[in-house]
Image 1 (cartoon, helix red, strand yellow):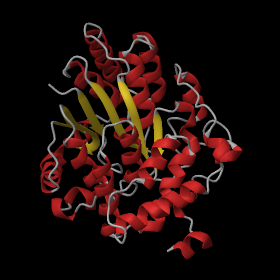
Image 2 (tube, rainbow, N blue to C red):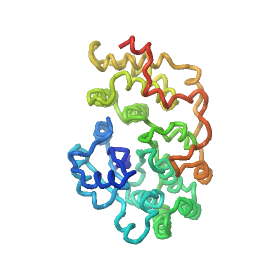
Image 3 (cartoon, rainbow, N blue to C red):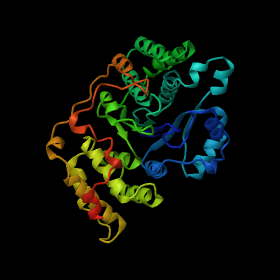
Length: 360
C-alpha cells in the first residue's frame, strides 16, 4: 500500500492548457494526445516521484470526463502511471443548468479529495500540486484541515457555500467527512503543497497559507524542495536540471536564477543548498558542473542576514479571512504587500545581470 501519495492537478499544472476562450477550449478538447504539451520539467519530476518507494500518483482535474481517454493516452505516452484520474462532470453540470459549477472548484475538488482520502492507505501522507489559475492552495489546505479535525463539518459546509458550491456537493462532502473520522490520520497529512505560477502571480500572494505552501515558477524549484525533504536524490535533481536545460525552455542562467529565488524566499535550508552546489561529482567541464557553479555564485550574492532569520511556524489557518482576502479570486490582491526583503523575488527567475553574464 502507498505510504506517500502525490496528488496533481492536470491543466495548467502538468499540461499547458487554455480554457479562457471558447475557441481555446474546443482546441484542447479535440487535440490529439501526442499534441498536448507539458510544462518544462513536469514529466521528468513525475517520473522521479514515481520511483519513490511505496508511492502513488493521482490526478484531480477540472477537465471534462469526456476527455478521459485522450488524457490517459497522453499520460501513457509520457510514461506516467496513473493510479487514479478524477475528471469533472462538466457536461452533466451544463445540462442541469449548473453553470456556476463549470468554473467553481471548491465544490468539486474538496469532495473528490475527501473520497480519495477515505480509500487511501492508513498512515499515507500526501504532497499536492496545483496552480494559481484556480483555488488550489485554498482547497488543498482546507482538505488537510478538515481531515485533521481543525475545521468542523459545519464550518466546512459554510465555507463551501461561500465558495459557490451546490447543496448536493456540500452533502457529498459531509458524507466523506464523517467516513474519514473513522480512519487514523498521519501527522502531518499533507506535507507540501506546490503551486505552479502559471499565471505569473506574485509568490507573496500565497504567504498567508504558511511555509508548507510553496509557490514555484518551475519544476526545478519543486525538485529542490523535495530534495531538501529527502524525497529526491542528488542524482535525480541533476537529471531534472539537465532535462530542463536540454529541452531548451530554460538555459543554465535562467535556471540558476530560479535556484536563487527559491532559496531567498526561505523555502530551502542554506547549508544543504551550499553542499548541493559545491559537492557535485560531475565532470568539471560538463554542462551540469557549469550550472552548479552558477548556482553557487547566485547563492553567494544573497543577503545572508535574511536567510539566517528563523522561519515562522505554520499554525491553523483562518479560512474565512483567506476568502475575504481573495483566496478564491486570482485577480484580487491577497494579504497586503509582500515583505520588503522579498518584494522583487517574483521577478528574479527572469532577470539576467551583468555579473552572471560575465561568469558565462
